[in-house]
Image (tube, rainbow, N blue to C red; front, side):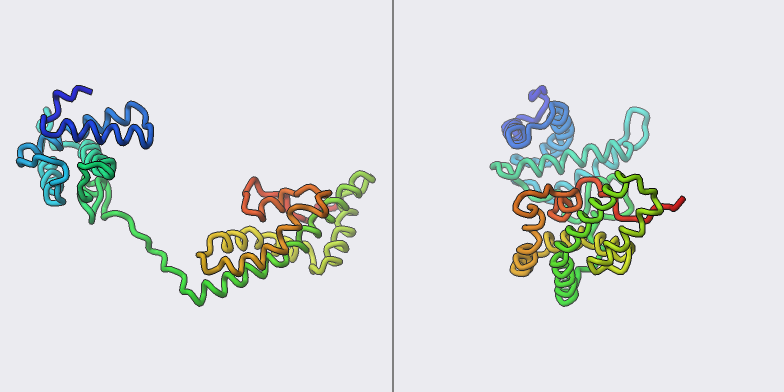
Amino acid sequence: MDFDTIPLVFRPALKAILQHWDVEVRPRGASLTTLFYGSKSFLAYLERLQVTCLSQITAMHCASYAAHCRSLTGLDGKRLSRYTLANRFVAVEALQRWALGTPYAFSAPWPESSAAHLAGLTGQGPRRATTPVIPDDVLKSLFQAAVERLQGAERLFEAYSAVESERARLERGGSRNGSVNGPIRTLIRAFGFRDKRDFNAAYAELLPAAAIVILRPYRGFAFMSSATSRVVPSLEGSAGTRPKTRMEIRATGWFPAPTRPVRAKPSG
């Protein structure tokens, strides 16, 4: 990077910003050079506006620079492409971001827009969330329902382990697929579930229930402790003798590949 090509008044600032970025993030060399070359035209434009320090930059300066770039033409006489413009504007955004925390910090270049929008790559400004926030009363009911699901998790764990053990025992004994379903159905009913569909539905609700409890704001933490106090011992196994099943690991918040649910097998 040849800093002699940068306006003299901005050389110390650009060096400090690049160093700050390099120390904080350790980006690839190509990222540093991209910011360096992308900043050249912006800094040259600021010099023509008689700006002497990056901290003096305002949104008006940046808007003026964007309009200037859109008016430029290339060697072929055509306007700069949208992607060329986007690269120039992204460099300004990156320059502003990594100037933060240095004496050369300046405000956001276009707070109501974005580089892509200014370059014509989008039909609107920066994206904003469109999903309404869940009202507190609805969230409270949802959270309480999730807690209730987790309070029944221990029974699900026991049923799951019992079903898998019984299935393995029957298959080792040479039972055919059809003859396995009957004993499994009886075992599931012994745990209080109507059938396999009822068990699978309760099983499927564990993961979203755990996510709701984990992601609930701090106001839900008091409820979390009462729910997890019954769930955690079952995750650790009975006296440490039973290993965790993959289903139990999922309920703790670790999400590997889904386990095989209990399902009917075709007979014959």
